Length: 214
Ligand SMILES: [Zn+2]
Ligand SMILES: [Zn+2]
Image (cartoon, helix red, strand yellow):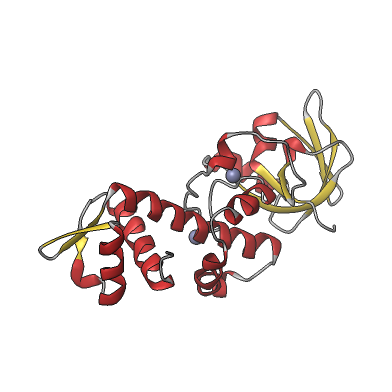
């Protein structure tokens, strides 16, 4: 039996609440949907103690999967379908339910195993991110994995370091900019507009390129 969309959303909210607040229990009163809560209790995903609610171990895993689907849906909508940030969340909430088990890994592979959602929140890794299976065709790839001469548009930059990000932005490496890789060795040389820039492999890994039509 599958969880209802409502129950899945509550699971996700619990998972996010616990991730952000670092508290194992949340106030039960914050969750109004009684039927959906009942469903989660029946599945053994949540534990209720007085006016507190928390996730069981089984529930934690499910919540992580729900968060993964939501954030992958956001990435897919933002990077591949160019959906604007304003309506991103609303659309992702509907879209994530379409990414059922198995499908989310295909989306993850397609997007090059993104580590963060468009809001910078971590995407929990799936099996596909751990094992490097035969590589299917990607839509998004890091610059370090491009062939010489390959081009696309910058999808997003993934770096935890401010300094690196500023360097890349100063080179004009903005999401949406056309980019082509001119050389891979001894350093990565790429072109944006009329400018050519050399960076090391570590920095090249931080630039994610959307390979479909330039
Ligand atoms: Zn997000
Ligand atoms: Zn993956």
